[in-house]
Image (tube, rainbow, N blue to C red; front, side):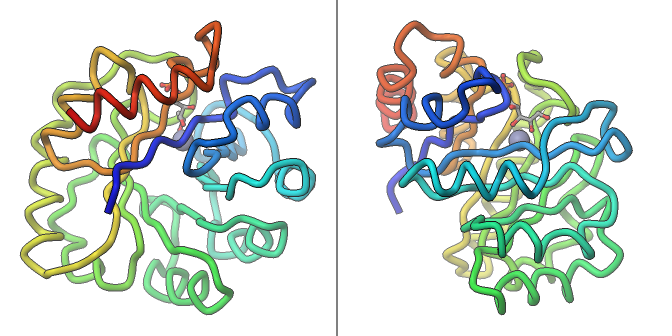
Length: 217
Ligand code: DX5
Ligand code: ZN
């Protein structure tokens, strides 16, 4: 599969979300960070905003749920138009049941790991998932520094995916920029979330292209 760049709307101007989404049309997915001030110490947006955003852009929505009780909420994000839903394993009561429900409702099922959560206990769950997200910052805020110490986990996750012959995607999120994306790609990631590196640039669409070129090097 070709590498994918997913701009994170978290670093966009929330008063102009439709325009900000259009500014990165050509990106593979639009990454939407949902935070509830419980699972993470920050509050962003919810189902109604995802619903409106989905109508404002052709780009499919990659919803990253940094919330408690994703078992209850994930289906509503699919109904609101999310094409991919990522829940945190640390928050999910029944990750296998949840992944199956997401797939049954027609979206891609994805599971995220915070920096201190190892991949190894979840090896047997990988076939239930369309994507695994390795967080490269502590979730909660955009603009944080990339955690180099996550590179071995990206590498180990890639090895497990390959060992099982799975086609699933491996996403990285947090501090991904022109300075760090090549290391993520080299470690085996194939889906790259970038917030400040895209929306902090003068031309977000060009920033997406530049990141893609670096990742493909
Ligand atoms: C952080 C979010 C990220 C965030 C990334 O908790 O999950 O998606 O938007 O922002 P940058 O790319 O600025 O680290
Ligand atoms: Zn995210």
